[in-house]
Length: 353
Image (cartoon, rainbow, N blue to C red; front, side, top):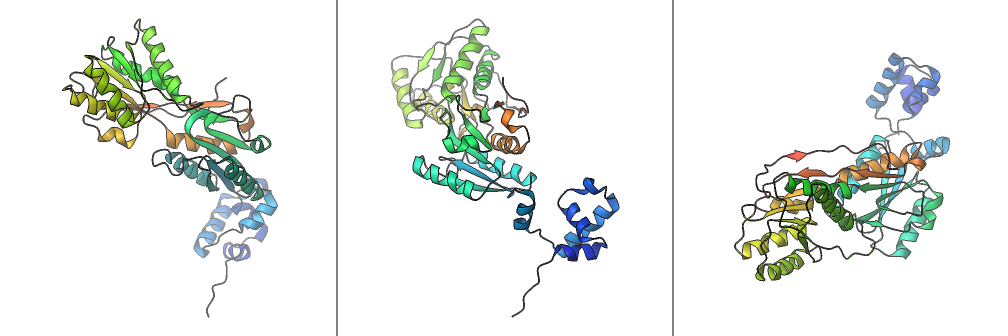
């Protein structure tokens, strides 16, 4: 049986013509401590690449007291096709820091959650990102309070843990601006009412919408209450329209609600946007399926995940506070007089007071 000997640090040093100590400092990113020349560093890194050298992470962990791993614990994020982009963003950011991500999903079971947190701690991860599928106020698990941890898509008002959230309030203002800028100031209704306990997205979106309308000297015409689901939105709007209601515009609190709205409007012979303009939230794939494509205020899932990891691993993470990430507008053809364009927004590096 033929076996291939593992390439060692000494092999790299011999190939590069330097000492093992010099090679170690270079490959561990500590060149500045020994004032190593650029030429020497280049030779060592080329030698490592040519030989296919892979560092011994266990040995590095003993030297640095770190494991180069991050734990991500979520409720239903990993199984959600749309929200799983948070994990994509977290994993990509972790790679930039030369870290691996260990993912555990609780499915909302507190016992599983406690075991997963303890398992992460037993594995001595360098930090934990605690994520929720739905933006919400929570009471963070007590085990996290003594650890390096960041809350993702949730916030605990009684905790000092950093929290990364989408800026739902400003997102609501952006949705309202799409209609106001198109001259739609009357007959505008909000569709949807989030019944989820402790959820904050719906409340903040609606607050942002109402505030922006009032600033412009106008008021919303009303709210069509329904849960955030296609069938619920269709049923609520179908009954409402059957009673003679004729809105100028609808602001749907998520893309599923918008799909139900499109179907109900069509059933009553109303066209989007000629008869009724529609704006939505989330920026899910569903938004692009609608015809005309709905203008939607997109959740920055990838940016949220990436920023959570950056915040977790930076030295001043304990002072990060609450960071709200901008929501961009993906403009479709669902607002009368408004063309299709996407407004991108960068994730902020600062924290809210």
